[in-house]
Length: 370
Length: 235
Image: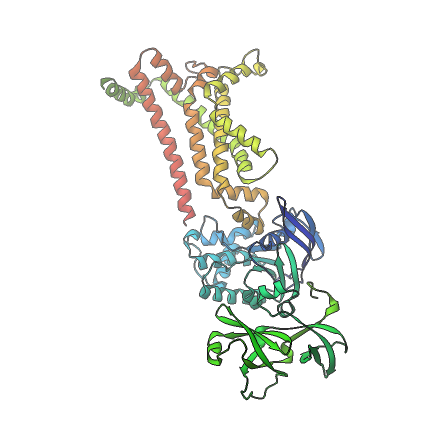
């Protein structure tokens, strides 16, 4: 099996007319990692992917593959890559011919091609579909063919541009599951563009958040998701805004952080007195009635708080809580909101584990998360 | 009506009369039409591909030139080619005037812009993302160009059929540069012009019907090719 490659870039800029659509200082995808590039429509994600995939030339900047500078004319470099886009863009031909397209370009002998096409289709759940007309497939089937067409090449870097955006949730769920498995098995470096952060979380180990062509956060998914660098990113990711605090002490690797007088416990190693940012994913915060008896658990953080605001968040509710001055966000199901009778001004108990808290020194900069 | 009826009978009988002259006219018609369309395809398709599938400085000018080329009357092209090939013209030493080659040159000038213009529209309709997709799977620019033509094949074949039609219609040009010399540069259209002038309307119409039959056969072949492409596309 081929070894995955490291993909990186510096100083990428791309303009369409007078509008700068991509202005990214740095991009890093370690070998074998899955990097999700997320952001709203028009953030420049697809253009960034086209530049990284050596499909379009940037106006400035350089892409590196395993440390070596590469460009659009570098066919040998492009042969290590493959992509699947939001629309399957199948060619006017049979399923087998579509899947064999890249193999033919790589001059793979016909018999070997047939074998690879067959196994690739079987792997993606389309066993025996070789002779079907590609243009008569349903959206989900066509997307599977498009994925098989990219995966059959065993690329060392795989680019996926919102491959499931136009599919219904059920089909999407199956495909994300299958794809995540294949990416794991094949050990490819994968760049995954999406505007759906839940999808990104389920597949990626690193995240880059883009806004208006720029990278506003870039780092391990867990860090970016828990400690978004600014309010816009926090809102986009559905995360609470990071809290500012000071390390008050440390016992056996568990930090006690003073946030406006409230002591939050977190796992980490930082010196006493260090100014830090503290983040907790809203999904990790549990709410109980104000007077409920909370069962014993390993959760170190237990507070009384007041509900400040309730907002709809898809099939969930986002609840802003005031912990004696520190604002925290929790996410609860709509039925929980009804059962608990949650409303602004109501007192509740808040519980979360020390391991669910992400801490970063304020001096380590914002945006670029190491 | 009588003249039409007689002409139809004459048209049916014509090929069986074994006239050596007629056979030469038909063969020359085929030679000029197919050669001019083929060369027009070879020259026009890359230009159409360039205009339709890429952005570059001077593209607007090239589009305007192509569109103008599509609208130039064949007699004007015939006149210009005649002046170029005439004894005192810059290409006079080649001694091509009043030869089949001269007719082909004029007809290529007629067919190329048409094939280029219509091909550009056909390939412009191929989604850019589909090309990116091909590129992302490792296609070189040449392989990408072939894929674009393959995806736009219905339109490209329609461009070729239209180019062929223009070549067949371009009687003015071939009359001027070919001279309608019997046994050498006489083609069906020039023969039709001549027979009408001589008042041989029956024969002129018979030749017209024969020409129509030939054009119909060639177009039927192109349509078959288009449809077989479609079927192949559908698996």
